[in-house]
Image 1 (tube, rainbow, N blue to C red):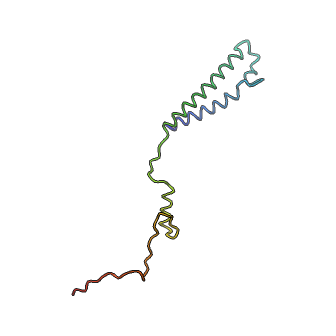
Image 2 (cartoon, one colour):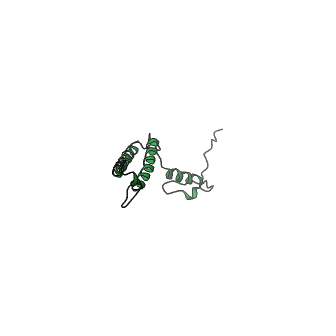
Image 3 (cartoon, rainbow, N blue to C red):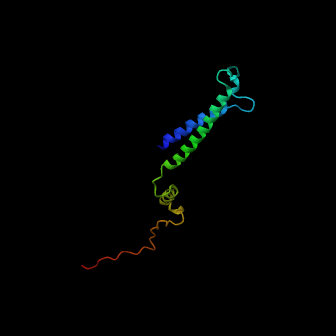
Length: 121
């Protein structure tokens, strides 16, 4: 549904571009080139239709935008990508472990205590 609404918004935006380009601007537009057919269909009726089409496309785009915000897919991850990268960096490079993560302990022979042995023979 989300992708359908995005496609409709793109289509309406392209139509809106063409409709705005053919609108009667101050002194002319596409409707002014039909001056010779003024007696047949009338230039005023053409501009009314183009204006209504512009408002209709604008309202359609607003409605689709609101619906798209409702149907936007939600992310289902519980952790962030930044935190995953920090954990990965800490696991591969213990010297540069981020704060909050304990660097792995080094096995130093001087600090190690020998395990008690069973001498009950």
